[in-house]
Image 1: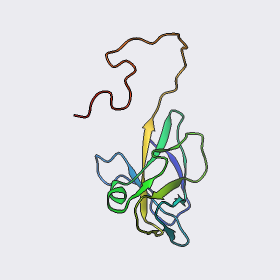
Image 2: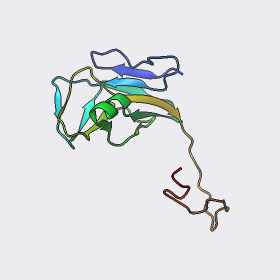
Image 3: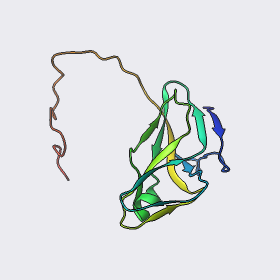
Image 4: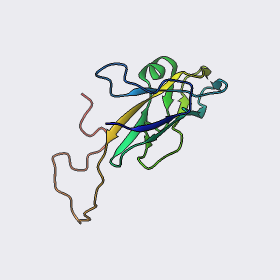
Length: 144
């Protein structure tokens, strides 16, 4: 699939690191570093603007290394970039650690995954079909 992109940053376009990678790293496009205190959040701009075909979305997801090692994650994970959005891609980062985290220009702050999605037409009914699980919700299938 070919996707139109405008890159107003000084960084390379997002790319897949390996043949099996689902996501591409997004880099911070900053004029000065951002200090993110514990429990603080910020929107980090990327300098990227994309035009996806209808039926696709771009999902902004956390980088596992930042989350595991530094407690930095994407607050609205996954963030969705809709096919009709033409603005700059931003990443809502939150610091869930007990230490301040400094975001530098060019730092890899999130992943971008392009995913196909379906649109539904609701069929309003009075009763849903029965299943073994039924209405069992959170934790109802056990923990082991």
